[in-house]
Amino acid sequence: MHNPEIMWTTLEDSLCELGESPFWHPEESSLYWLDIPGRLRGRRNRYLTMGSALIGRLRHSLNDRKVPVWLQSPLVELIVENGRVRGAVVERAGRRMLIEARKGVVMGAGGFEHNREMRERYLPSPTSADWSASSTGNTGDAIRAGMAIGGAVSLMDRAWWIPVICAPGVDRPWALFAERSSPGQVIVDQRFPVFARFATPIDIVGAWRAEAFGDPVVIGGQLVRPDDLVLADRDGVILIDSSAAEDVVAAAEAKMATEGEMVRAIRAGVDPQEAYMKYRVF
Ligand SMILES: Cc1cc2nc3c(=O)[nH]c(=O)nc-3n(C[C@H](O)[C@H](O)[C@H](O)COP(=O)(O)OP(=O)(O)OC[C@H]3O[C@@H](n4cnc5c(N)ncnc54)[C@H](O)[C@@H]3O)c2cc1C
Image (cartoon, rainbow, N blue to C red; front, side, top):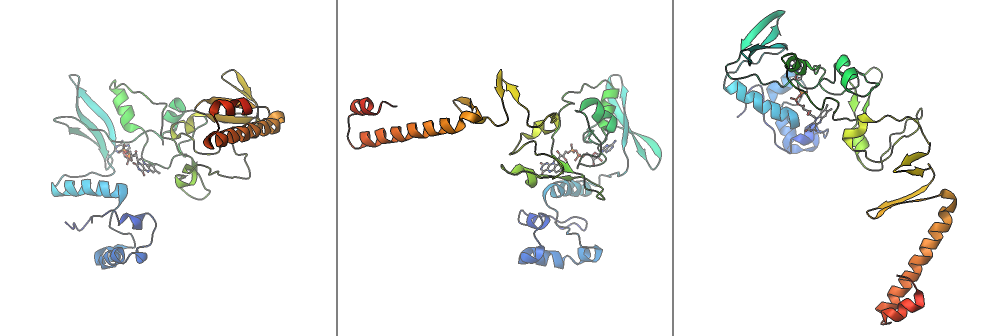
């Protein structure tokens, strides 16, 4: 099972990759330190976890079957003959090579998040190829190769969005997962007002832009002002003008108190009709 290149992982091992020190887990700690070849190579733990473990397993199978894997050999275009994809042209060590395919070509070359021109064409503006935490090689090559031979595309204006921080001096943006996913969390930057609180459906994050802050809006034909009191539940939504809010809350509390009294009276044995005649609430 232990390939010299790749070692396998268990769920518990993922704790190490998730940031917990192997020193706190005696079993993981000994696996780590007893991996002498790994320690001679460097500090990186060779016990793969999560996505790395998935790819590690696939690589292991390829090694077993002696399938050559060419790195730094990008797909350039697809070759079509008689209406069928016959192969792919790849660039390797400065040379273009045609790889013939007997059955088909599977393309798994990511999206176009690092392609400025495609982002500007398909995604909301403003946009930048630097605003992505994904693999920097994802420049849409396979999508364009497919389109070049007449392939249809759809959902090009859709993306899996997440806020990222582009910190000065850091070459790759940092994606905010835990930082923004718990309800009630807000990201405070003193240079900007807060435009949204609580969790937002992830698929719309990149599709909206804040145009104004603290302005009234019309929703479903109803004017909503920034300081209106809004109460929404499965029965509907009510808007209360802020100037009337205190009176409305006091009246609602008084009604609830009378209802409570009536319920207590009925529970104590008063006839419901008699209770209604007395309290006049339901
Ligand atoms: C920060 C981050 C965290 C994530 N966390 C999770 C998570 O926890 N769980 C989860 O399920 N998903 C997660 N995802 C999503 C997941 O990583 C992607 O959905 C997944 O990797 C997509 O796989 P893919 O093979 O389609 O593309 P990718 O993994 O992006 O791989 C595409 C590869 O193709 C290469 N390529 C590009 N052009 C060419 C070319 N011309 N020739 C050859 N190769 C080329 C690229 O360099 C890249 O290596 C995360 C994504 C990001 C960005």
